[in-house]
Image: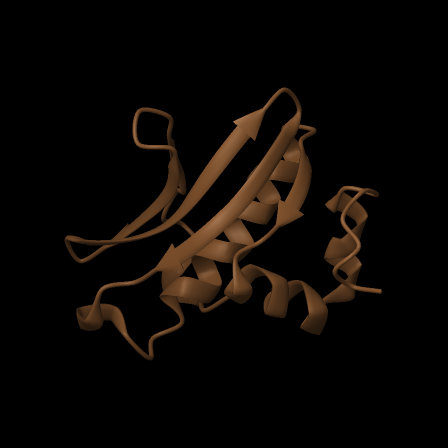
Length: 103
C-alpha cells in the first residue's frame, strides 16, 4: 500500500453495507453482505477523481485486514478483490473453505 494511505482508516459503514476509504473528500467503497461470521465482498468502486492512485488497492488491503482482525470468513465475489487475492495468495487464509473460485 502506498504510504499516503497507511494512516487513513477504513470505515465499516454498516448502514450502507460497505467498507469506505475517503481520500481528499472522495470515497471509494466495497459493498458487502454479512451473515454471522461471513462477509461477502460484492463490488468495489472508486471515484474517477482517485483513479490510478492505488486507492482501490489500499481499500481492499484495509478491508481484508479488518476482516481478518475481526475473525470473519471471506467470500470474495467482487472481481477486484478476487484478483487481488489471486495475486496475493497468502490472503486465502481468510477465504471461506466453501468458496471454490480459486481451484
